[in-house]
Amino acid sequence: MSDLDRRTTQEVLDDHLRLAAEGDLDGDLERNCAEGIVVLSARGVFEGHDGVRELARQLMEEIPSGEWRYVQRRVAGRMAFLEWTVEAGPFRVPDGADSYLIEHGRIQAQTIHYTVVDEAGRVLIRADGTNP
Image (cartoon, rainbow, N blue to C red; front, side):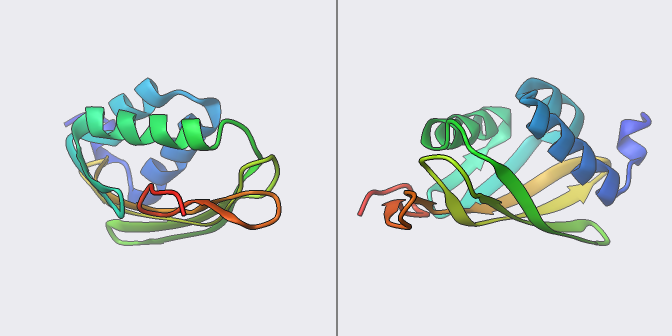
């Protein structure tokens, strides 16, 4: 068992958010995501590191710039919750929410929800990935 496998839920979440802020998706996948991770969203079910890469690609395509803000972080046992927004830039997210199941020092499962709006608050991309 490696030191990474012994990390607490809080330590994994903190490392995940640090690497995300640095734009290090590959490092995040290697350190923090189980090979068999499952991510559920209104867009569908995404599996493994390739599924996470696809969701990250979609998010970066939809929100290429902006000011990301973590509103709430909650940890209880092996579960974590993150509420987030993107508040500046031409594309914004008022309602971002992720939940995580973390075991053996890795994210095993995640949910993600967000809606993309313009500066006036008009919905550009629904949570299911469709346009109004």
